[in-house]
Image (cartoon, rainbow over all chains, first blue to last red; front, side, top):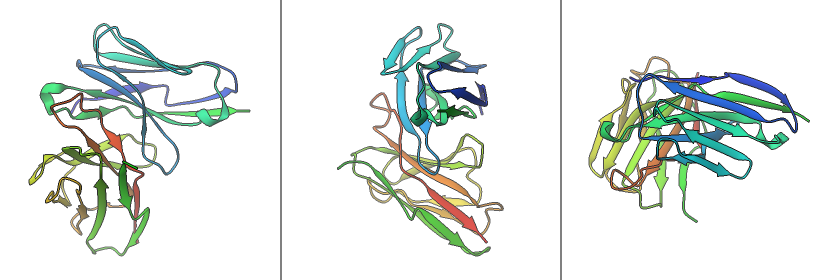
Length: 112
Length: 114
């Protein structure tokens, strides 16, 4: 199937710093989704992007749907300890049965 | 309150035994999905169902089986044919093709085969 390249694989940052992570694909998607997963829990949806070029915010989180429809980024501003977790991007293609293709995840660690 | 429930949270089984993982949703979603997650990995699709009494294989269906007799329920059976069943299993649901179809996840079941 399609592959999403998510980077970085992990980040260890100081509390208060900004964070940026991204996903790239060799194919286009109609929708980009960003999820956060805490240890031992299911992923929780953070932001959904439905249009190329769309820039959406959710509190300290901002995500963009790339113009080429092959990439997306997620920024977290002023990180706090509870931001710790694994962040996954997922691309969705409507004519492929709406299935999601997931990136490998970015593990974020925040030092107080 | 509405949501997706998975039970049990932790499951231990002996090698060679079949085991069934439960997934229930009260969101009135048409579509349901099963994913497998291995340590440090992303999610891989096992099976999905877009409507009652219909389901399709995902990327890694071998050694698994499902049923969709009710809209609310999509149980997954891990059979003895699955060569490496120890993993974290996640169920998800979505409105279905008629909507934006964003998937929402349950809390997961960690299966350990001894």
